Image (cartoon, rainbow, N blue to C red):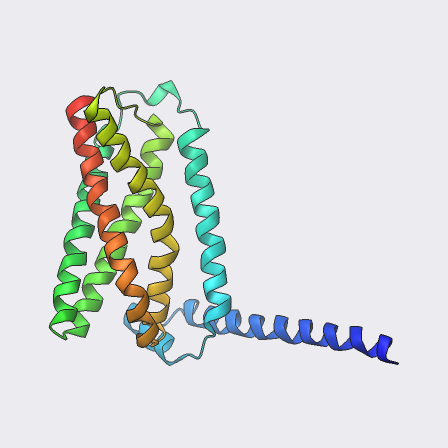
Length: 224
């Protein structure tokens, strides 16, 4: 009997865990697909909902991994068509502008939370997230149309540029899941965990935004 009941217990545990995960995602789906709810109402409902963090953090890691894999393919495998050469050349400057706006709103958000203005802090961080999201869309469009830009400089300038670029790329990979996780804990009212993670997320996100502008300045001076 022991050999028979042991697999049954394991199967029961697996089914229970699957139902638990399914209920969490179903609850999230009800929040996201309510046609009569505005954005502020969505935030309030997410704070009130008891959504388990484990499946959501796992989903964030999976989605971030897929997004990073796509971006690496876009950078190092995809070849841009020559038909768009010389077109939409404003996109690199737009990317730098969005990165700069993100860095500014991040600093403004830090100022507000230091002065205990939570509503203004939330607004600033949501704006920073919006600027980063727009940057990502513009970045994908730019690299799809034009491909990667090779830095033509040599010597110490090239070494400095590649060092900044490498740190920017590596930390941007780290920043994506951290930003999403930090927002998840904030929007679901888990502020103690949110604060602990935000201490690491904020400087990484700010560094990535600032170095994005710095990379553009290097390329503008030497390549564009």
